[in-house]
Image (cartoon, rainbow, N blue to C red; front, side):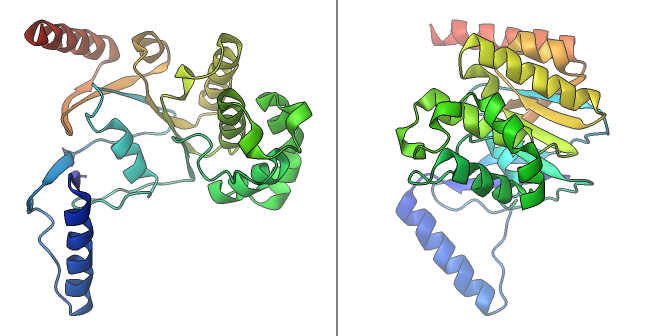
Length: 251
């Protein structure tokens, strides 16, 4: 509801604002969340939408439009500067695959570490451990340090742990663009099985064919604002028109 998030382009100024806001909070004063200070910009501005049970919401937009920021706010990684988020049920995000994996721990140890970070109990991880290893296709390297894995192996292990969490609401950010064709197909099948279990899904992708294939509703973000919320086919056509117009203007 009216979700907004701002960032600062200058690192030193961002740190200064953070310290100043913290000091104000200690004396009971709050900065104006609607005010943009020097070098700040709205990464998201007044976003409104509702996700219903068993709905698959697609989110598309050019790079820098706010898609990943939105998912990070929904998962609680970033706090909103304005507005509110309500979630009913467990939430899992497949956003930054491999994030939270320790480079000097083995694949086996990282499965337990990452699963715990996602909210799984040890018993749940024990129960799904063999399935995770089989899905990730890292059998011979299970007890090797994570920093010896190839980039593809890291992605496969991160995805395998995240997708076996099976939350009520799954947030997926462009993960099906990585890995070889076989793994991408297997990943899509796993996501589709999640949908068939009457769960809800928010799906970010630049692959418009995938968006048309699985989504029931579509949002278009542009420079942090929602410019479309509705039918998937109409939304994809609108996005293609916008992309074509921008291409001609840039050429």
